[in-house]
Image (cartoon, rainbow, N blue to C red):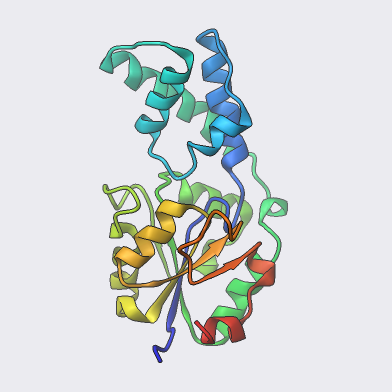
Length: 216
């Protein structure tokens, strides 16, 4: 049986929920372009890169833009998003996240953040949990989107732990796939009906224990 020596966490939907801010920013952009997007549509944007998300939003609105215009729109959306996350507080840490991170550290496990977001450092600082991570790998250090395992493999590499000794915590299907593509175990945060490929599915880190970790 493989010994787990490190835990790698996705940020959004696992540690904090910034999806609401992405939604508000995309919705504002859509409104300025003369249409609206629903929360259901927003589900399709989770874990998806900024430019791909923009393409989907424009498609839903039946709007065509040049590449230069798209760059400008994506930048505008990101500016609004950053303004919102700069107002985040420690109250926005999801239930059990801080406690489980502390339990991992107390047990001598290494911890890393593996997120596609280029704003990870800002969010960790605002909610006051940057010190819980040995390593932070985000969109500034990687270029390949999940399900490519680049973000998690780089995390394992910087921690100095072999991939097979790492477990990933993810709330997106693409993230679970990325963990498996990198030869790691995956704990899904969310619905067992959605995250069917995960090795274990829990509703949140408040339901995670070191015992469950050892059983993976």
